[in-house]
Amino acid sequence: MRVLLTGGAGFIGSHIALLLLQKGYDVVILDSFVNSSSKVTKAISNYLLTKSFNFNLNTITGDIRDKNLLEKIFNDSIIDNKPIQTVIHLAGLKSVSESLTNPLHYWDVNVCGAKNLIATMNEYKCYSIVFSSSATIYGLTDSVPIDENHQLSPINPYGRTKVAIENMFCDLYKSNMNSWKICSLRYFNPVGAHPSGMIGEDPIGIPSNLFPYISQVAVGRRDSLKVFGDDWDTDDGSGVRDYIHIMDLSEGHIKAIDFLNSKESCFEFINLGSGNGYSVFQIINQFELSTGMKIPFSIQKRRDGDVAKCFADIKKAKKLLGWVPKRSLEQICNDSWNWQRRNPHGYK
Image 1: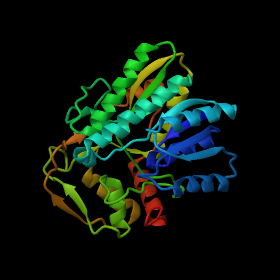
Image 2: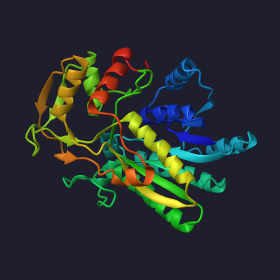
Image 3: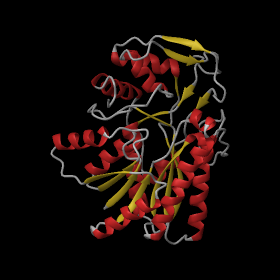
């Protein structure tokens, strides 16, 4: 079965690609490499070769806004007698701060790109898609755990583009309810790395997320970690978030494909998180325990748009997908550090 994986060279996409290939899927990665490295696919191939896996991976450099390219990918697959049967759509821009300063670019890349992809799928009668959504769409709430019925109230353009795409899927499904199979996975905070240390998270510039920042402090690339507020209404005063191991998240995508394959048609929104809340101080302590590395930090004022607690209700994922996260916070820390110390400058 051939799967088109848009954004497959990114942090999340690379781990999903590796699992798909191990499961015997034929994978086509489409990536612009604007926010990822061309060395990622080589790292995936090298790992699989060391494990003596037979695999079929094709990487195409391009933009999902290029409709002609999308049509060529689908058409070439038919010529190969391996038509694309499922799409995992990860490609898009994801910086909250950047979306605030350049919203039109986010609407163009994320929403127009998704429209192009869906239109091409429709033309080629490929009706199965797993979409990378985000917990950002739930907006500011201290009502935890957050389930899929929670009100959608994103507070930034990035989150609003995710809601717009979900709405587009909703309209599409209603227009052809007998054919479309759609699963929108709402991620919380994917972290960690593949246990081999051969692929992991390599953000461009200063990391905006906690784990890559901590890892870069540990490896000496950053002086210290900034903790935004120690006076939140939590057990230790620091903010609480849901962190899910990237391998658990990736396995959720495999389960989502299995779920879609078992249905004649469907449209589901499903949270993917650990179902637990971890505070910033808890993360720092566990990282120091797991790695033996000291993480210096300084307390900063709270950031606008932050909340005290945010973590997922994952009952629906358990019920529909038969999926549960397996990896602990300790393993997240170990695998994050294993990747960073083996690759102190990422893929560079």
